[in-house]
Image 1 (cartoon, protein in one colour):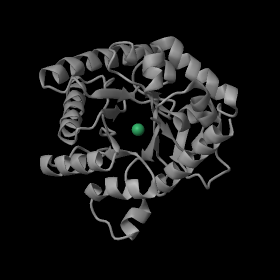
Image 2 (image 1 turned 90 degrees about the horizontal axis):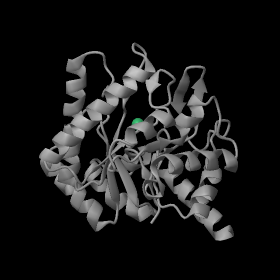
Image 3 (image 1 turned 180 degrees about the vertical axis):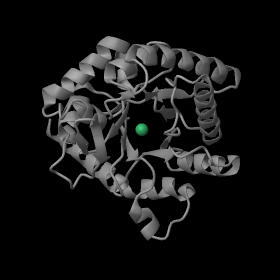
Image 4 (image 1 turned 45 degrees about the vertical axis):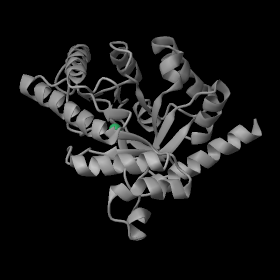
Length: 285
Ligand SMILES: [Zn+2]
């Protein structure tokens, strides 16, 4: 099943009087969505009790849960202490995922503004191996870790780098943020063949099984020569990429990804727009 949902909570969720993320699964089901990415981007602060409640509500409402790990993770830091802390933050995110019964966590890999790309990649792979070893020992082995394609040029996380990392272990599933790819490539995604190329690259690199279960982020994006500037909403039509082009490729190849919308403020509304676009593409082909 293909899944659509928001990253975090829309403005409208709060405007309608909701207060806690525990209320999100039911709210999402009511508007017709079936995935939710819980944000721990500023730190893993959620309690065990709330995690369990959120997980229970997600199961009752048929919502696929993932968690976004803290933004400040840097697996490619020159400082060992920062790399060790990054391992700890990832394990904390996995612990919350375990409580929630979430299937995936999304992880930013780090920066290569102070080190070479080669060193950064090699170091991040070593850190990931350490994470996996510890995750197994702690009983988190069934949760997929999803390193993300990042949007700024000086971040570790080109599609090639993320795929290279994912070759380390079968349970690593790439998070392909198409907005970030578009920003990194100075607006490179403009047609169905452009998206087909990306999908083929993933398949050739890590095979069709993980391609089928891909984790995707999608939103329109504004960029500069440094890459990502900011995520925009579907109504900001002056910025790409166009979801319809990706929808066509997903449908034709019969993929079943989880698609998380990271639009500003309107992430749930835009996730629904994307679902509708997909349904229209699927109905018309
Ligand atoms: Zn992210």
